[in-house]
Image (cartoon, rainbow, N blue to C red):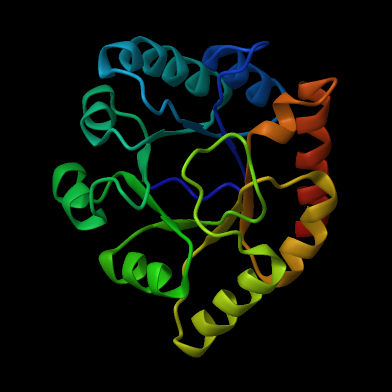
Amino acid sequence: MRRLIMVQFITHFTELYTYKDSVQIALEGGCRWIQLRMKDVDEEQIYPIAWQTKKMCKEYGATFIIDDHVEIVKQIQADGVHLGKLDMPISEARKILGNDFIIGGTANTFEDVKTLYKAGADYIGCGPFRYTTTKSNLSPILGLEGYSQIISRMKEARIDIPLVAIGGITETDIPLLMQTGFHGIALSGSILRAKNPIEEMKKIIKLIESWKN
């Protein structure tokens, strides 16, 4: 299984950028973990974009994750799948995909984290950090206090699993989030809303790298 990358990009369709555009922006900016997220879109429309994204990720040596669609992941041999709280259970996805695929899950509470950990998730996307327009039906906002409480309870329960912060994260949030104990961050809107998205991604990558070192 590929190692978890500290900066993850989640695709988003905007007035300015298609899904493919957003993938290209992230890759050119140095991101090496792409999650193709296409909610409320028919599978027939996802397949061609998934194939394109796989090819682009291969060219850049990036890990390619697909949100929700386990069967598409298996058919096109993506690197893995990310499952939301209302998507297929981790255990069921593991039966379909086996151990060679990455399986991540979404958590909003410590109980979510514990459930995903016991189910065998490879990593957990925890959020939202703050309000974000890129996702509908948001779970309760966590903020730094909520994150600290979850991580504290994880330590008490000796739950050791990579935790990725997600939801409205900007450059200025990164130092505080990394101090809290997160393995990495996931971004979408803050990159695509930037005046120069590629340079914004490069700046985020550099900041994370400097923190890691």
